[in-house]
Structures are given as structure tokens and as C-alpha cells.
Length: 321
Image (spheres, rainbow, N blue to C red):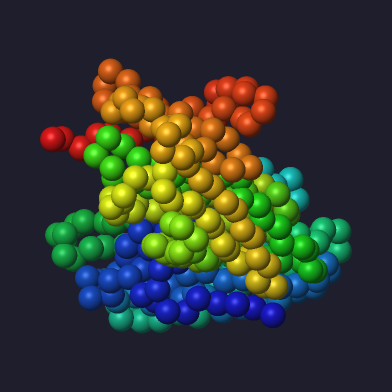
């Protein structure tokens, strides 16, 4: 089974269109690829072939070269080349043709073949097609040559690995002007990517006062992903609200919930430069204004009261009065 993203104007996983705007603006004169991402499900020892279409909407002929490399994503979801996977799945891929010239206005279909070795484990493998583009640019002058690269992302899933996801933390953070953000940290301890979506509710007196959507988010194996949602200033004291996240993830739409709440009003310090909040199951968060006007958030774990120096450090710049 193969899942493709074929809408040339659609947003790609991991903000691909933000990184490679040529994929989304044919009217500007560009090279378009289809698909921009694809999931290929296969078994160990199996060979599968799919089609990558390259379209030249410029007014000049372009030379295209295709090579393959591993990729991963960072905590904000941006893809980057890596060599961490010792199984070297980039070597499973080939393109035919791998190099060609495409005329102005022309289209070229490329057969992309993945040959999975018998020894491949049941998990996810992540490979990008690096599509290098070279050729004259008549819009920039007769002698001008341009070079650029765009990428198509391939996720190869071998067998039926179990999708896993946890919510590491849910923080409600406010500054002195009562602007607020919800910071949700997701972690994938498994060996295949998964996708989560859902909502975060702000609840007062047992009634949902506000609901904020968590849009479909990909979390790669062994990675964490931060989701930050800016929310409107709250009409009443922040301590009156309980935070609750409800997410569905994976093909089975498994449900995760996570509760967070602030200390009640009597326990919040009255000093305008300090707010104290508690996140259930995770940490007590102390946000203290420093001399530069930023809020540095420290996390102290529940009963142990041990300072976590490496994580949960957030800075929020105060609004000018």
C-alpha cells in the first residue's frame, strides 16, 4: 500500500513547502514535483516502484539530477539530511532516469524503485529524493545560470510496527500582560512515525470555556515534537481554569489525555513579576522575570523537587506598555 500527497499546492509534512516555495507557485516559473511526500508500505525482501513526476513550468530547459539520502526532523518538524541509520536505506532507492534534461513547459515521469533487503527490520525508514536543478535563467539575463534543490520525502514502513506516542508535558504559560500560550510536548518512543491531532480545552467550573485545535502533527521515531498554541488573554484569573489535552494518534486512533492545572488563586504569589502554575503528572512551573524582561521557566518535579536544568526552559518577551 502506498500513500501519496499529490496536491501540488498542499502543505507538505515537516513544512516542506515553507522550505521549498518553488513547489507551490507555478505561476512564478518553477520546477514542480508530484508527490512531495509518500508513504510506502512493504515487506522485507519486497521491491516496489512508484512514480515521481517532474514538471518544468519555467521558460528555460533544466537539467535534473536525482540522488537519495536519509532524513530526519527536528523538534519543530523541519527535515534535515542525516546519516544516523546504519541500515543505509538510501541505498535501497534508485531513480530511472536519474539524470535528464526537461524542456520548458515539459513533464518527465521518473520511476522510483525501492528494493527492501531481506534483513530489513519491522520499522520505519526515512529517505529523501534530492532533486538538483541546473540551467539557464532567461529572466535573470542571457548568461545567468541557476542551481537549486528541492526534495520529495519517502517514508518506508516495513511490516506492521506498533505506533507509539506519549505526552511528556502540557504547560500553560502567561506573562505579566495576561497573554498566554499552551505548550504541548509529544514524544514518540517507537520505531515508526505517527500522526496526532486533537484539542486542548480550558475548563472552568466543570464547563469547557475555550477549545484550541491541535492540528495534524507528525512525530518521528525517537523524537519529541513541540506544539505551541497562542491563546487569547483570559477574562478571569488564570487559576480558575483547568487545562486538558485530548489527542488521537496512529491508524487505530488511539486516545491520549493529559491534565494540567494551575494552583488555586490563594497559592499564586501576588508579586506581578512572578506567576506559579502546576502541571499535573509532570511538574511545578515557576516563571520568574529576569532583568532583561524575559520569563525563564524552570521545572521542579513533583515530590522529589529536583530541578531539571536541561529541559522546559522557555522565554517569553513581555509586551511593551
